[in-house]
Image (cartoon, rainbow, N blue to C red; front, side):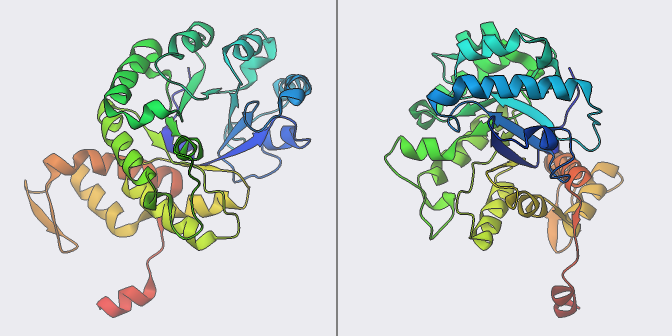
Length: 309
């Protein structure tokens, strides 16, 4: 199994398996800035199109296996099957080694064992998606986290939060006037970040479906980062660079993180007009350095620098 950082995901683009340009995206010839891709055989595919989608995907994977898929320019590739039965079909393909892993849709305690029986290849990474009504129960989430770790160990790269499906459980849809955090997901995301984050899982943020509202997407990515989420689902290529920009680390945070991990500072010190306590901020510092490694640093705002100086 490859040692992959969850921060490598960035903006994860979902594409239906029926897309004619799938091969070009998978091998990095199209959308060269893309870092991760989910080929969807579930919600993005109608039931009548499932068989043709499987055939197209298998043909594409055969071409990927013959191509020069370079790790430094091609995205991580995951496949999202409809159900465990379809996953078993995929696992039987010799071509399946061309992908990095699977996204497990609508995972809950009742379905976990069925998925675990099928997705048993130790070299395949996994990204379960939480998008059922069970997610609103913190006790069930904690139990599911323990069960995931017992079944899959370190194969879980990240846990994905299915925001639209979770709102659908309440017969709601996100409004155009605010971020997801101004809906009941403003309870769910912090809860998941706390319960599952404390169990050592990385989490990724839900999709933002309003394509013509980049300012609101920027606000939401800022809140995603504040809650410790490591990436975000994208449904259009235009969203990917915006998500990557939002994941960059402010230079002040990077400098502070470096001071903390160097270990040559007092137990408590002042930096950028804030108290820093390395014993409690060390994990934040390590995480910040990892995020900067994958997404870079935000340039200094010259206007703010001049105002402060």
